[in-house]
Structures are given as C-alpha cells and as structure tokens.
Length: 278
Image (cartoon, rainbow, N blue to C red; front, side, top):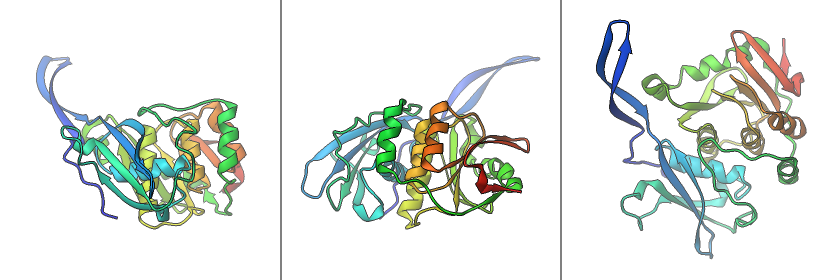
C-alpha cells in the first residue's frame, strides 16, 4: 500500500512580537500545522460512509486512519485493508479527506458508536471499559523491561521529535523495543493521533502483535491511549506525565503495564509492575 503524501503544511510560519529584557522585536515564528481530517470507510459491497473527523497535523494520514480503525475494532489488521487513498471528489480539502476501502465488511458496526473526535478528546465511564474488554483480549507476553532502560525511554523518544525541535507545539508517540530502540516515532498536534499514526505505521509495515514492544508517550495517559495500546497487543505503556483514573483501571483489566511520570530517573508503576525488573 502506497504511503500517504500531502501538500498540506506540517509547519506554518507567522509573524509575532517577542518581548524581552531589551525590549521588543518582530520575529518569524514556526507553528505546528493543524487541519481537519475526515476518514471515510467503504466495505467491499457497501457505500462510502463518513465515520470520523479529527484535527491533526498533516502527514502520515493513511497510518492515522489505519491505526484509528484498528483501535476501534473496525478492522483487525492490514489484511482487512484493500486500499487507502485521498478523496478526489473534494477540491479545497483534497488532502484532508481519506477513504479506507475494506476487503471484507467492517468487523464492528460503524453505527454502534460514533467515532467523532478531536485532537485531544477521550471517552470515559465504566461502560466504555466493559465494551472494550468484550472485544479486546487481555494483553499477554512475558516481555520484561529493565528499570534503567525504562527510565531512559522518554529521552529516546525526545531525540526523534524533529517537529518539536521546530515548533515546540506537538505531542509524540513511539513504538520501541524492550531494549530501548526506536522502531517508529510519529508526531502530531493531538496525542491520540500521534499514537494512531505510530501503531498504524507498524501495522501497514507488516509488523505482528507487539508482545516484545513498548509504547512511549510524550504527555499524559487517558483511557483511549491505553485502549489503542491494548488493541495493538503491546504490553507496556510508558508516559512522561500523569495517567487518569480510567486509564489505570483499563490498564489493570487489559493486562497492560502502565508506567507514568517517567522522567529524571524515576517512574511510577500503576499496573502489572512485574514486567519491570531490576
């Protein structure tokens, strides 16, 4: 499947006034790009249906669509995909609309849950966890991560954040090996989008279930980020900042080791701590 390309801007420029000890001066600032992306789904014999829209940083749009649909249970993997392409029936928004063509009917009723989202949205409630546990198996795998390696994973992620170097305005998510090697890192204005892109990239590249892999996030952890990690079969989730209560509950029930506040040589393990050794 061909990678996505886009003429939309990932980095924009604007004029701003900087204030400092010596006064003020006009400067050109670089901003992280933010534009809408509409994702449409077409079954093998069904009509094209608009399923979700999100605000994202342009780029890696096909990975975003694939990662999101797997996390939501619409597809199980790359074998369910026939083609992903930008829509040609729109003009001004040509590279802001993608259609995902499936080889078989959706594995989950698209009307069962609205997928409308924003770059920072999440869902909440015990009912959401119950529904998720019904369709996502508990994550297995006997992988272990050395505590010293775990403490350094955010630094590995940070070293791959080229857009952050330019703009300072985006999140990052990466899939790393248990030894601390970066397998794929994606950046986006939205935390959820960044993870969808990273997991979508692994899926489209033909990677199997990530039982010996680790997800690393640049920010806090919400329910949906645990959901996406578990749906990908990855047993360890590491974040620089805090988790929500629902994220911890979800990680505990789905067998995910959740490590948060991983910075300055420290970490707090909220669920399944046995995978972290040393």
